Structures are given as structure tokens and as C-alpha cells.
Length: 195
Image (cartoon, rainbow, N blue to C red):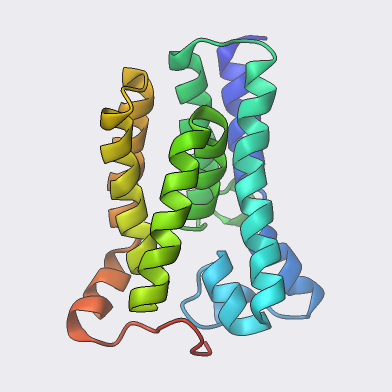
């Protein structure tokens, strides 16, 4: 299968707005609640922990699925990286929601699970530790993305995967810019606070 078709599949999978779709089942437009984000954190604050975890898992799995499909046709790290980027952009800028999507943390983890499961485990443990200590999901997401970059270097993963992790970190910072502002001025919501 041509690479551009794999990228298109990755983008379309990434674009599936699980947070929005599931919240609609409860007659709620998640974009009108809390932070307005369609991701798992805002869903958790609005609809509860169980629904939030479901959205997190589904967002994670769509990243994994995009790469697992790509692996059926290519093992080239460059092509796999292009599919991964397409999936991330699909999640952040979904065609189904006017190109306004999530922040990319869950789908990024789903991609990481496939290309570097060892780093996935370390990153999940690190992010959970940060959340337990600070109670800030946004801080765990940003520091987790930074952790991936460091581990990509330490574990000597393919250069394209390292560059992918650096791009993911930059996008995470950009997408979390409002969270960063709130962290600085002390108004960021902690785990357990309702939307």
C-alpha cells in the first residue's frame, strides 16, 4: 500500500473524536464543558472516572491501530513515523470536528506502545508518579512527553522515532499553552476537581 494511503488511514483514525462521540451519548457536548477539550481529562471531569478512562483507552488504541495497520505493509522507520505524525495530527486537528481536537497525549502513548513498548512502560510509570505527586494531569502530560525524548536518546532508538518524540513534545507544549499559563498563575485544576 502506498505510504500516502497509510498516512490517510492514520489521519482518519486519529480524527475519530471518541470524547465528543461518547459525551453525545449522554446528551452533552464536551466542547461546551470545562476546558472545552475533547480529551480524556475533560471527559473525566465532566462525566466521571470510568467514562474518562474509556475515552483515554480508545484514544490510545487508535494510535496503536494506525501503526499496526502500517506495519502490515512496511517496517521502514521513516514511513512508520509519517503514519504516526498523521495520526497525531488527525487527533489534534480532526476533519470531523472542524479541525479542533485533543492535545495528543493518549494517542501519542498508543503510538509509543507500538514503536517502543519499553519506553511506553517507563513513561506511563513516570507520568503516573508525576500525577500522584502534583495532581496535575497537564504537568504529567508535558513532562511525560519530555521523558520520551530523553529515553529515545538513552535507549538509542531509530533517529526518526527520536525526531518524532521531539515533534510530539513541541506539539504537546503548544497544545498545553493555556494549561501552562494556569500552572504558572496557580489556577490549573487538579485531579478530582470537577469541570
